[in-house]
Length: 123
Image (cartoon, rainbow, N blue to C red; front, side, top):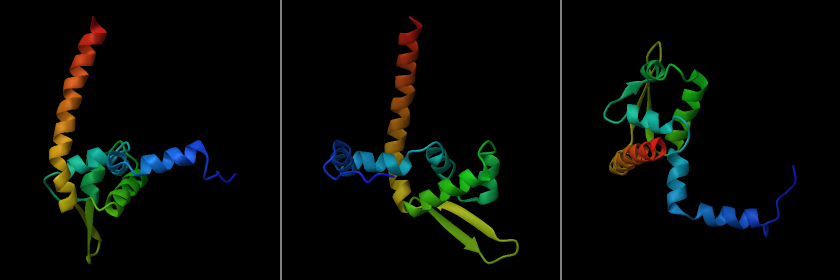
């Protein structure tokens, strides 16, 4: 793979985007399943098996990858209990709980936008 020049337009754009707080947040919660997982954990602690049942359409590997990413980003807390068989539970961190008012506003905006676009395209 070729090395990208630090003076290239792509490199300059990448630096500018990386410094944007909004882009940073979207990178942390973006992806196909992260918001759905956060939503499932909104007010409860769930075991891995419960999450697997909730998201039966998602592969176990994808669920594991998404949970690891959320844990790495400090949004989900993973607790492993020393039992046989092993019991693993997931819950939101206080940092993720702080995010809920913003996500609620985004959800309301999304609902409103979806209705307006639906009405506009139907005409």
